[in-house]
Image 1 (cartoon, rainbow, N blue to C red):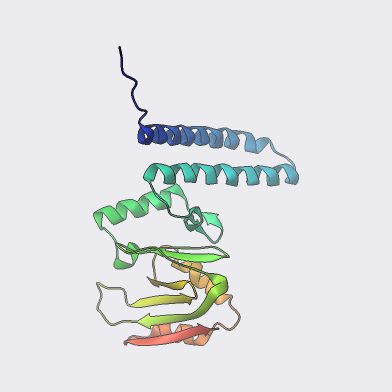
Image 2: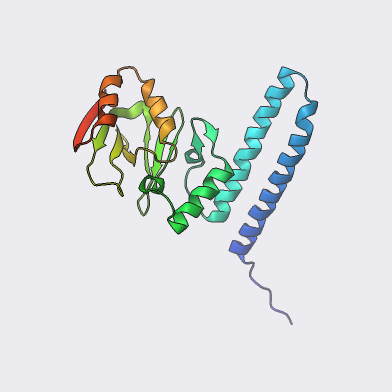
Length: 203
């Protein structure tokens, strides 16, 4: 008499998410074929919302496959989903270490929060509404190290990353819009060549 085998839950979970990925990829392909046929602004708006939903579901399936418990919001920059090409390139560069020091970091921001993924460190994150100050740290460690660091201090914790990190431009653009951001001090800090700290925003 054959024994009943216990289902291999991890394998089933992986297969389910692979099926989800394939399904969402097929849906996205079909949607791109149908998009040129839409002629009204109302239909295009509804279509765009559906595209975002499918992209989010596909990303969640990818995170499940990777075994990641990272919040899905951390994969958005300025409210826009990071492209698969960006993520793939970052992972390849990180694996083979064929990049500048600042490329060890990936920064994600949206209107509500910021997060920084640094090598071999826990995820740094904070909410913009709990922002306390922004400090620019200038180092003098030489050409093989990052010289300019941005420190976003919030009630939730600090987010520290080097200028030039992936996503840093979006953060700087967001900081520029803050009421009370000191643009003159920021310019001075970016041009500084000696070790110093500059506070460009304080609540």
